[in-house]
Image (cartoon, rainbow, N blue to C red):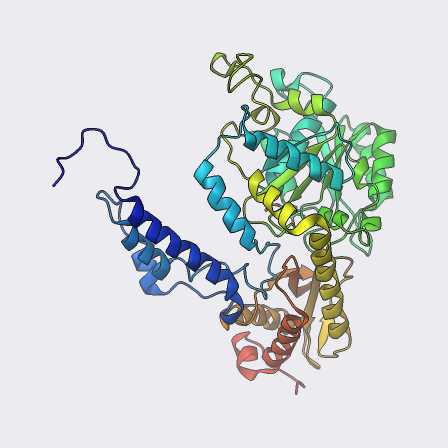
Length: 496
Ligand SMILES: *Cc1c(COP(=O)(O)O)cnc(C)c1O
């Protein structure tokens, strides 16, 4: 019996025991991915699991082995399921097996990547430079890895605000100045209002502009909005171009937007949350012409880059503008010319966070182990899968394709035969839920062309054509099932 120590560390008493549990955990983690196809994409938490996770504050220690068993029982089985080959809801990435290894190692190193003279900073600098090159940005541009596209977009817009305001907005704030406004298409993701609100522009600081039949911003309508606002004393600040809208995958005419922004002296920001990754493919790249002319660009790596959460990237063409938007000074952060902190905290000076982790390792390992060509191949494969499913839907009279399929997003619905529109919305909502609950596939829903639609965003490197066939068959089967119609609450006239 050891006497109670006076100095306590959180390191394990037995590294051997920790190692045993850790090896088991790693094996289980990899098996989860290896065997993922054998199970359903999603299963709801059992009441027992929910109860087990409802316990009070743990005051006393529990052995890691026992805690791990609880994890295996009550946590591991009940995931969102985006690791599964038939998960296509919202826009979620699958993650990679190498990403598990990278995260384990990054966690062991546990670097603070606010800056500092360390390998992690070199890796982040390198990764951002690679991403800039892949997006066609100049080598002198700036960038930062962040938690996701929302923060990447916020970061880009913050730089836009400080550049375009025409006064020292960081010092004075916005009070007493003309209203600043940001413009983007009606199809822009909901981050836009959230970020304009956070930047003090208010939700109405973002103006949604009409789109054409392909879901792309109407340039003439944008010009009209700018003219009207200027006449009313509003100060246009920035235009957001979409490279892949969330509901339809539409890509704005980025070249035209770049021209317009140059002419009107506006900041040109592109939200390419998932769509910008198509730039990795020489075949898909022409659709993104103009992307590299933006002043700032936001995209995710945890969506179509197939990486684990959380990682997105913002690129900013003007390094000085980027830095001056976020740079701070404090005595306790002052560099000492030599040693571990020879210069300013480079990454902390480019974004919101001071303390930040080594998410760059995940990106570095993935880009190296797969190579950009293979990633591009899988991205193209997802686009082909969307087209394949669209072709099958078009050829099936009981299904209806809703909107064009320019990229990897596809919306469609079951329409059966002779069923009224009012009933179809409920019926399709029920189909979405049944696909989820029956463990077949995860799709989400949206409204397209006035109808409730099944929506897929294919950012999944595990999907195969057979998975889309399975979905196709299941939608037809569920649509024809009387029980589904009853649950959806509709009478079914004239259907088979
Ligand atoms: C997902 C998404 C976002 C937000 O990205 P997060 O990584 O979830 O913060 C922004 N824009 C588009 C088009 C998206 O698909």
